[in-house]
Amino acid sequence: MEKGSVTLLDMQLVEALLIASDVALTPERLKECLDEGHRIDLDAAVEALNERYRSEKHAFYIMPAGNGFQIVTDNKFELVVRNYINRNVRARLTYAALETLAVIAYKQPISKPEIEHIRGVNCAAVLNTLLERELISVSGRSDAAGRPLLYVTTEEFLRYFGLRSPADLPRARELDELFRKDENEPQALQPIVKEVSED
Image (cartoon, rainbow, N blue to C red; front, side, top):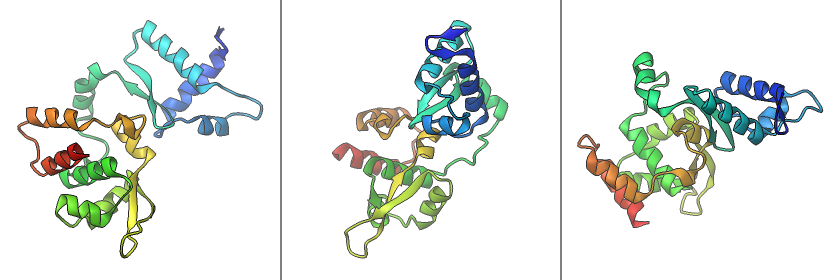
């Protein structure tokens, strides 16, 4: 049984790897897992699997994540899944970590002094936490005085937030509208939204 140029075995192999992996499945990772001479068109396999999931009304689908794909549950089951888990398996990010991550995501590459200038507080501990969780990485050094390290977001950041690329980040107007609706918005995020809006 074939789906275009994708065989049933190809689909099963891709599906098994997507379910087993806690990171996005990329063409490179897929190639490393296959026997020599066995090639699978990952995009075609994902398309065929998603078509099957839609037609059989499954509660999950495969979405782009960074340079690869990951399997996720349908958004309409979010509340049930959250109730089942009862808490994030991963430790939740603090507001300070989210603020710092937002600054890096929108301004990358950016140095620690620049982040601290925007946030108005020391962020050494937060940067260490984000580095440990592999949400950010060091991309080089700035030409500014002291040549501080420059930080950027990672593939893990994209996967964590369900983004294909940094271009999928919400725009300043969308953030502003979202925060205006949320009375529980942490006030410290407002300067970040303003800073992003000015860009």
